[in-house]
Length: 392
Image 1: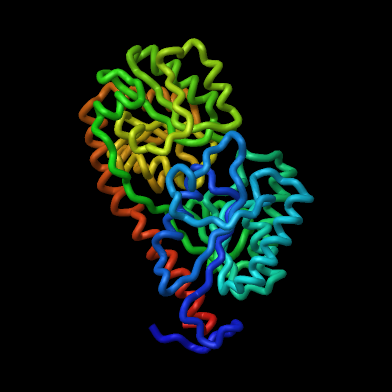
Image 2: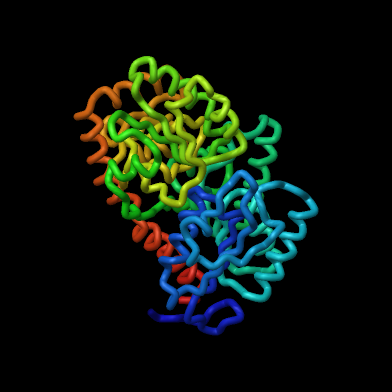
């Protein structure tokens, strides 16, 4: 590697300092991606540090459950909730940390951290700023007036950002259509992960308290409004009329967990597992995955299921179609209960189809969404910035 004279305080930096900022490391796609990068990027080339707040009371901490080896510098006021006083403190702490660490690149993840982290980077005069959109808030989250404010804020932040990273082409296209950033700023870097060793089907079901025989439909993720737990329950009820012996397992938690707990008519058929560190056990026990969301970025649960050879029925929203190929690795529908029910019954009723889609999902997902590919793409992104700036 040839190192040229840099334009930072380092005359010729042998390592690029990267400060990564995320609001919180709750169980989910962003935390998984951040952990993969913290572990995978070459420490001889990158000196990187992770700054994050704490998870909420209805969330599980990804670091505690699945990544105890990942070191996190905690910013107590950098969390999920928007509180002006706390947010100003977080901005001040992040700015001070940047002035101490003197990063070449600040890379932010998630909306709130993207705003505070990039603002701090401007105040601290960090040379390069990168932000990853793991999804977006343009649909299904806020009223039209609030959404317009979000778009205006993101447009302003994009103007002070060197690279905008989208997890999928659909996410990128939605953001561009909203006037956020310019095409040349964007890089599409899909998620990447590896399949954890899993128990066999019989052992997995024993651990989860499920019968050895029969069909199992799994849901993995947060239980929040955008994920539509009400739609999930409607599909479950309708599917049971056609396949009475089917069981549904839900691995996750969230502010609408009570909606699932109140479904007394599904007692015995609905198993609420909460957050589990051994999510691979859930996939090993399942015959298919069900996703009923109104909006998504690129759900890691679909990637994890694909690596486990579990086909999915999912709403065709966000970049879901970039993970699930309709009719090849799973089945896609509009966000309608009736369509989701028909596709779910079809998959449960056809053993050969389910097996074929599962095997194809395993092969396609392993090729497109591996951890090494994510690390390589991110390395190349940072290297391109270093070359442009004359650091390398």
